[in-house]
Image (cartoon, rainbow, N blue to C red; front, side, top):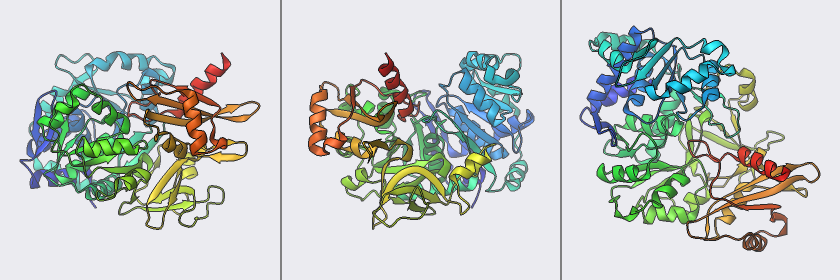
Length: 529
């Protein structure tokens, strides 16, 4: 196994004329030979400013070309890249910088006010004392205490290949490549340490399952700060010599559809909510998306009706459904392109090569037989641990190396995995365990339903209330009475919710993951009014 730097170097030498990075909005197009040249220049320039092997460096920005140059330049140096949510506020920025011990930050100039606020925030611990270097993507002059990105690139113009080989020779596949902070669906982000080895292993396994080749062109509109963006698309595509097409800095349905058509993208990666937004775009049918054939839907259950539209309307006939976690270095299971649509919706597929998966009794930790519900555990390509949190690491990774995901599921006789919900999300009503995911899948059968979320709300007398939030499709009307009657006919009286709410949106992370803890907070606040 190799390192990220070696993988990029090999791709640049094998496919020098393939498009590496295309940024549609900014009209940037770099082929692999040129892209690797920029990465080397940036690495040398950063080294001249004190960034070396083992340095912790935050990358904080939207999906711009410089983000990718920064990621791979740090990988070449043997430094540790720390992706930071471009939408985070001062308190979150201060927390990540301080907790990760970031000594440097790479960012766009328009983020200066948030950085300034973070320095003055109580979580900033005396002005972010670990932060000594600020590199700024700017077209103007850098402010005092900053280094302009153009200066970094200019400082690295005289790259010696012996220097590059020396850097590569000093690295180990088991070095920490990045520290990725969990997206905060639970409200408590943790720094997940991931090695070059595990990131590359997962990338190769996933792209092999998707049948990605150097001829493919991967649409990259998932945020780069998220693992799907920086690993499942960027790193995975680069390893295969495929082209990365970034439609725009931020999610923009019109620019995404325009880029998909103009650049003849063959693969698309998205959460169901992103696909829905694209298909709701005005004049959606006017774009030529005939080149699309593959990709991955992940991050949330995908209703059968939406999957049919992806295949029939978008033409993505080989689309797969994936199941992954940051702690497991991205995808651990995926459906097969040839699987029937019903299987690509009802399950998350089979384990990828290099991943062991089992289901265990969450109380006894004993493995359960096939077709029996249990907690999903995985081994192989698991994280090195939570940064500075050995106690939390020991709570989820056992002595045999199994990572306990916290997800309940069933593994059938063919090895296909069906996720039934989070252990902590199970709602116990009148002594009966109700799995939100299974109930949500039933609600998706209602033709008026665009999205549905089921969760439990603590109650001082009744213990737990069963709550349902439903978002209707545009132009459709959903009634509470109709919803209750439907659930009664499909699931029985024990699944009748205590609370039903028709909504226009769900609270989500910037990567599109539903934040059920926020929904619980909002419901509790409404009950107290």
